[in-house]
Image 1 (cartoon, helix red, strand yellow):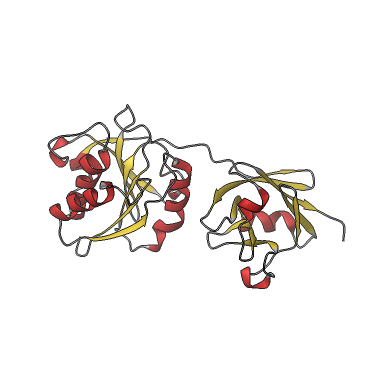
Image 2 (cartoon, rainbow, N blue to C red; image 1 turned 135 degrees about the vertical axis):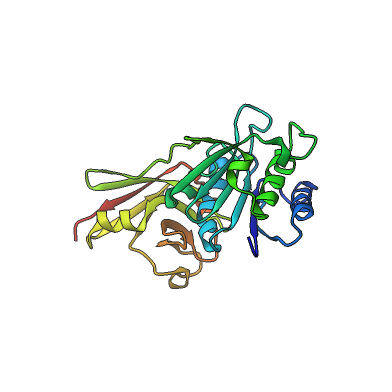
Length: 265
Protein backbone atom coordinates (compact mmCIF):
# COMPACT_ATOMS: atom_id res chain seq x y z
CA UNK A 1 0.00 0.00 0.00
CA UNK A 2 1.47 3.33 -1.05
CA UNK A 3 0.27 5.48 1.84
CA UNK A 4 -1.14 3.02 4.40
CA UNK A 5 -3.55 4.28 7.03
CA UNK A 6 -4.23 2.32 10.20
CA UNK A 7 -6.92 3.48 12.60
CA UNK A 8 -6.97 2.41 16.24
CA UNK A 9 -9.96 1.97 18.52
CA UNK A 10 -9.83 0.53 22.03
CA UNK A 11 -11.02 0.71 25.61
CA UNK A 12 -7.45 1.20 26.86
CA UNK A 13 -7.68 4.89 27.73
CA UNK A 14 -4.55 7.03 27.41
CA UNK A 15 -3.10 6.96 30.92
CA UNK A 16 -1.20 3.68 30.52
CA UNK A 17 1.36 2.48 27.99
CA UNK A 18 -1.02 0.25 26.02
CA UNK A 19 -1.84 2.51 23.07
CA UNK A 20 1.73 3.76 22.73
CA UNK A 21 3.03 0.19 22.67
CA UNK A 22 0.69 -0.77 19.84
CA UNK A 23 1.69 2.27 17.82
CA UNK A 24 5.36 1.58 18.42
CA UNK A 25 5.06 -2.00 17.16
CA UNK A 26 3.26 -0.87 14.00
CA UNK A 27 5.79 1.87 13.27
CA UNK A 28 8.69 -0.49 13.91
CA UNK A 29 7.29 -2.73 11.16
CA UNK A 30 6.24 0.06 8.80
CA UNK A 31 7.48 3.58 9.68
CA UNK A 32 5.54 4.99 6.71
CA UNK A 33 2.16 4.28 8.28
CA UNK A 34 -0.26 7.05 9.14
CA UNK A 35 -1.86 6.18 12.47
CA UNK A 36 -5.25 7.69 13.36
CA UNK A 37 -6.93 7.29 16.74
CA UNK A 38 -10.68 6.78 16.46
CA UNK A 39 -10.96 6.64 20.23
CA UNK A 40 -9.44 4.88 23.21
CA UNK A 41 -12.23 5.94 25.56
CA UNK A 42 -14.67 3.11 24.90
CA UNK A 43 -16.08 2.07 28.26
CA UNK A 44 -14.02 -0.85 29.57
CA UNK A 45 -15.13 -4.17 28.03
CA UNK A 46 -18.09 -2.51 26.26
CA UNK A 47 -18.14 -4.29 22.91
CA UNK A 48 -21.42 -2.70 21.77
CA UNK A 49 -20.17 0.82 22.40
CA UNK A 50 -16.98 0.07 20.51
CA UNK A 51 -19.01 -1.42 17.66
CA UNK A 52 -21.21 1.68 17.44
CA UNK A 53 -18.27 4.09 17.32
CA UNK A 54 -16.41 2.02 14.75
CA UNK A 55 -19.51 1.71 12.56
CA UNK A 56 -19.97 5.46 12.49
CA UNK A 57 -16.32 6.27 11.76
CA UNK A 58 -14.79 3.61 9.52
CA UNK A 59 -16.33 4.69 6.20
CA UNK A 60 -14.95 8.23 6.50
CA UNK A 61 -11.53 6.84 5.58
CA UNK A 62 -10.05 6.06 2.14
CA UNK A 63 -10.48 2.61 0.66
CA UNK A 64 -7.77 0.24 1.82
CA UNK A 65 -7.64 1.65 5.35
CA UNK A 66 -6.86 -0.92 8.04
CA UNK A 67 -9.15 -0.61 11.06
CA UNK A 68 -7.46 -2.09 14.14
CA UNK A 69 -9.99 -2.39 16.95
CA UNK A 70 -9.48 -3.95 20.37
CA UNK A 71 -12.25 -4.17 22.95
CA UNK A 72 -11.50 -7.62 24.22
CA UNK A 73 -12.87 -8.79 27.58
CA UNK A 74 -12.10 -12.39 26.55
CA UNK A 75 -8.42 -11.78 25.76
CA UNK A 76 -6.38 -14.94 26.13
CA UNK A 77 -9.50 -17.12 25.93
CA UNK A 78 -11.00 -19.21 23.13
CA UNK A 79 -12.22 -16.32 20.98
CA UNK A 80 -10.31 -16.11 17.70
CA UNK A 81 -8.13 -13.22 16.52
CA UNK A 82 -9.34 -12.39 13.01
CA UNK A 83 -8.78 -10.33 9.90
CA UNK A 84 -11.87 -9.38 7.90
CA UNK A 85 -11.42 -8.27 4.31
CA UNK A 86 -14.28 -6.32 2.74
CA UNK A 87 -14.67 -4.65 -0.64
CA UNK A 88 -13.29 -1.43 0.83
CA UNK A 89 -11.44 -2.04 4.09
CA UNK A 90 -9.56 -4.37 6.40
CA UNK A 91 -10.68 -5.01 9.99
CA UNK A 92 -8.29 -6.55 12.52
CA UNK A 93 -9.23 -7.53 16.07
CA UNK A 94 -10.93 -10.09 18.29
CA UNK A 95 -13.80 -12.21 16.99
CA UNK A 96 -16.27 -11.19 19.68
CA UNK A 97 -18.90 -9.16 17.81
CA UNK A 98 -16.92 -5.90 17.75
CA UNK A 99 -17.31 -5.65 13.95
CA UNK A 100 -21.05 -6.45 13.86
CA UNK A 101 -22.35 -2.99 13.02
CA UNK A 102 -19.55 -1.95 10.67
CA UNK A 103 -20.11 -5.05 8.56
CA UNK A 104 -23.79 -4.18 8.05
CA UNK A 105 -22.55 -1.68 5.47
CA UNK A 106 -19.80 -3.81 3.93
CA UNK A 107 -19.58 -6.86 1.70
CA UNK A 108 -17.24 -9.35 3.35
CA UNK A 109 -14.85 -11.02 0.91
CA UNK A 110 -12.65 -13.01 3.28
CA UNK A 111 -12.36 -13.87 6.94
CA UNK A 112 -8.96 -15.04 8.16
CA UNK A 113 -8.31 -16.64 11.53
CA UNK A 114 -4.94 -15.23 12.58
CA UNK A 115 -2.84 -18.34 13.22
CA UNK A 116 0.52 -17.66 11.56
CA UNK A 117 2.79 -16.74 14.46
CA UNK A 118 5.42 -15.54 11.99
CA UNK A 119 3.53 -12.23 12.03
CA UNK A 120 3.12 -12.02 15.83
CA UNK A 121 5.61 -10.83 18.41
CA UNK A 122 7.95 -13.59 19.60
CA UNK A 123 6.36 -13.68 23.04
CA UNK A 124 2.57 -13.61 23.28
CA UNK A 125 1.15 -12.45 26.60
CA UNK A 126 -2.26 -13.69 27.71
CA UNK A 127 -3.47 -10.17 28.48
CA UNK A 128 -2.27 -7.92 25.63
CA UNK A 129 -3.06 -9.32 22.21
CA UNK A 130 -3.48 -5.75 20.96
CA UNK A 131 0.29 -5.34 21.13
CA UNK A 132 1.42 -8.93 20.57
CA UNK A 133 -0.91 -10.08 17.75
CA UNK A 134 -3.16 -7.38 16.32
CA UNK A 135 -0.65 -4.53 16.01
CA UNK A 136 2.03 -6.60 14.23
CA UNK A 137 -0.56 -8.13 11.91
CA UNK A 138 -1.84 -4.66 11.01
CA UNK A 139 1.72 -3.45 10.46
CA UNK A 140 2.61 -6.32 8.15
CA UNK A 141 -0.73 -6.00 6.34
CA UNK A 142 0.12 -2.36 5.62
CA UNK A 143 3.28 -3.55 3.85
CA UNK A 144 1.13 -5.38 1.33
CA UNK A 145 1.30 -8.90 2.78
CA UNK A 146 -1.64 -10.88 1.35
CA UNK A 147 -4.42 -11.73 3.83
CA UNK A 148 -4.08 -15.49 3.32
CA UNK A 149 -0.51 -15.35 4.65
CA UNK A 150 -1.80 -14.57 8.15
CA UNK A 151 -3.76 -17.77 8.68
CA UNK A 152 -6.61 -19.96 7.51
CA UNK A 153 -9.74 -18.73 5.81
CA UNK A 154 -12.95 -19.34 7.77
CA UNK A 155 -16.58 -18.90 6.76
CA UNK A 156 -18.14 -17.31 9.85
CA UNK A 157 -17.53 -14.70 12.51
CA UNK A 158 -19.18 -13.64 15.76
CA UNK A 159 -21.97 -11.08 15.86
CA UNK A 160 -24.08 -9.75 18.70
CA UNK A 161 -27.85 -9.47 18.45
CA UNK A 162 -28.83 -5.99 17.23
CA UNK A 163 -32.37 -5.23 18.33
CA UNK A 164 -34.33 -3.62 15.51
CA UNK A 165 -37.26 -1.30 16.19
CA UNK A 166 -40.73 -2.84 15.92
CA UNK A 167 -44.13 -1.46 14.96
CA UNK A 168 -46.89 -2.40 17.39
CA UNK A 169 -50.26 -0.89 16.67
CA UNK A 170 -49.84 2.84 16.38
CA UNK A 171 -46.40 2.84 17.98
CA UNK A 172 -42.85 2.43 16.77
CA UNK A 173 -40.87 0.88 19.62
CA UNK A 174 -37.11 1.21 19.79
CA UNK A 175 -34.40 1.50 22.41
CA UNK A 176 -31.50 3.68 23.44
CA UNK A 177 -28.47 2.11 21.81
CA UNK A 178 -25.69 4.60 22.54
CA UNK A 179 -25.08 7.58 24.81
CA UNK A 180 -22.42 9.94 23.53
CA UNK A 181 -20.04 12.17 25.45
CA UNK A 182 -22.60 15.00 25.47
CA UNK A 183 -25.29 12.80 26.99
CA UNK A 184 -27.28 12.61 23.76
CA UNK A 185 -29.53 9.53 23.70
CA UNK A 186 -29.00 7.83 20.36
CA UNK A 187 -31.59 5.21 19.44
CA UNK A 188 -31.74 2.23 17.10
CA UNK A 189 -34.39 3.98 14.98
CA UNK A 190 -32.97 5.01 11.63
CA UNK A 191 -34.23 7.96 9.65
CA UNK A 192 -35.62 5.63 6.98
CA UNK A 193 -37.49 3.50 9.52
CA UNK A 194 -38.87 6.56 11.27
CA UNK A 195 -40.31 8.27 8.21
CA UNK A 196 -41.62 5.01 6.75
CA UNK A 197 -43.68 4.68 9.93
CA UNK A 198 -44.74 8.30 10.41
CA UNK A 199 -45.67 9.15 6.79
CA UNK A 200 -46.26 12.87 7.53
CA UNK A 201 -48.68 12.04 10.35
CA UNK A 202 -48.46 13.82 13.72
CA UNK A 203 -46.57 11.98 16.46
CA UNK A 204 -45.03 12.24 19.92
CA UNK A 205 -41.79 10.66 21.13
CA UNK A 206 -41.48 9.29 24.66
CA UNK A 207 -38.17 8.62 26.38
CA UNK A 208 -38.40 7.92 30.10
CA UNK A 209 -40.89 10.36 31.60
CA UNK A 210 -40.35 12.95 28.90
CA UNK A 211 -42.66 13.38 25.89
CA UNK A 212 -41.41 15.39 22.93
CA UNK A 213 -43.45 16.60 19.96
CA UNK A 214 -42.03 16.98 16.49
CA UNK A 215 -38.45 17.06 15.27
CA UNK A 216 -35.78 19.72 15.23
CA UNK A 217 -33.45 20.21 12.27
CA UNK A 218 -30.49 20.75 14.57
CA UNK A 219 -29.47 21.69 18.11
CA UNK A 220 -29.59 25.37 17.17
CA UNK A 221 -33.40 25.23 16.87
CA UNK A 222 -33.89 24.48 20.56
CA UNK A 223 -33.83 26.88 23.46
CA UNK A 224 -31.14 26.40 26.07
CA UNK A 225 -32.17 23.50 28.32
CA UNK A 226 -34.93 22.37 25.96
CA UNK A 227 -35.48 18.70 25.22
CA UNK A 228 -35.63 17.91 21.53
CA UNK A 229 -35.69 15.04 19.08
CA UNK A 230 -33.63 15.10 15.90
CA UNK A 231 -31.57 12.91 13.61
CA UNK A 232 -27.89 12.96 14.44
CA UNK A 233 -24.88 12.62 12.19
CA UNK A 234 -25.11 8.81 12.21
CA UNK A 235 -28.65 8.91 10.80
CA UNK A 236 -30.42 7.71 13.97
CA UNK A 237 -33.12 9.37 16.03
CA UNK A 238 -31.72 10.94 19.18
CA UNK A 239 -33.03 12.80 22.20
CA UNK A 240 -30.94 15.79 23.24
CA UNK A 241 -30.95 18.82 25.46
CA UNK A 242 -29.70 22.10 24.06
CA UNK A 243 -26.46 22.85 25.99
CA UNK A 244 -27.38 20.14 28.49
CA UNK A 245 -27.16 16.41 29.12
CA UNK A 246 -30.25 14.34 28.32
CA UNK A 247 -28.89 11.18 29.93
CA UNK A 248 -28.23 12.83 33.30
CA UNK A 249 -31.48 14.76 33.25
CA UNK A 250 -33.65 11.75 32.45
CA UNK A 251 -31.59 9.08 34.22
CA UNK A 252 -31.83 6.89 31.13
CA UNK A 253 -29.41 4.07 30.36
CA UNK A 254 -28.59 2.11 27.25
CA UNK A 255 -31.28 -0.43 26.44
CA UNK A 256 -34.13 1.69 27.86
CA UNK A 257 -37.17 1.98 25.59
CA UNK A 258 -38.17 4.84 23.34
CA UNK A 259 -41.50 5.01 21.55
CA UNK A 260 -42.87 7.02 18.64
CA UNK A 261 -46.66 7.18 18.90
CA UNK A 262 -49.01 8.47 16.23
CA UNK A 263 -51.51 11.05 17.41
CA UNK A 264 -54.68 12.50 15.99
CA UNK A 265 -54.28 15.72 14.04
